[in-house]
Length: 380
Image: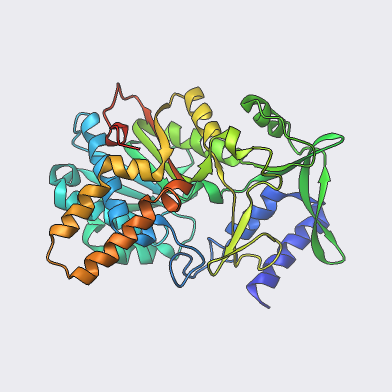
């Protein structure tokens, strides 16, 4: 029996036993069911052999520039003897490796007291991460999500994530003549189907009310309640420092705009987009765009200060991507390689591409007026 069929049967059995399930429960199973979910099964997800590219895939300069900002965060905290980095959803460890490579090379004092904690739901990734981080293993430790989110782990430093929040399970809602309803997943003649019904929790309507959002009749939208729970939990673990969230998304007013009648839910399989989440269960990524306004609002409620929010290209330009490119130009690599790197970095900073689609949110806790590189003014 294929993994796809196994997962289908598991979900179908749950529906048969408990009745229809929320889309969030369906998405949780598709992405995180042990050994069968997209992110909890073995296999390459990112890059040419996977299903999608991320900024990490493009060039090491992405991680090096983020490391520049982390060094500035460290200085904003008074250059403490110990500083902890936490990455949630580290994938193969490429971003962590690029960050530590830079800090070991350029910030030896900070690196000497540095700890990196990787939080990952896919057990087999630890081996791949350890191989990539072989030169830094004395600074690295792993925590299972249950341990990290239990409340027993605390740290000071910076928690960062790249394309994590977009993969957290979302509820789907639709505005009908009867008012706001939720989209459920049910079973009909052995096939997974959608049906609308009463909201599973009043938190869904409260979410939109808190934003001042009124959906137009017929409009569908995704609501990510888990993202708010995630931010609350990591903020409690953070004693002092920063949270950096990198993902594709919009402020709420833009995310829930009337022209997005079907919301932003998409699937990815072998670099192709797919709108049907009920095929290739566990074998295609399912994502939705991040509501950054709600992350900032929840952050303010739990003691986080929003220090910077904007497009990825603005963040990279302010934090040193040009300096990275200039170093390449001064190096002794071939002209052909320099051209390849220029084209790669162009993907990261062009507003029409990754540079404009992705956003960066930096929040702080317990830091009085930090001076971050991303806060520098740039042209444009």
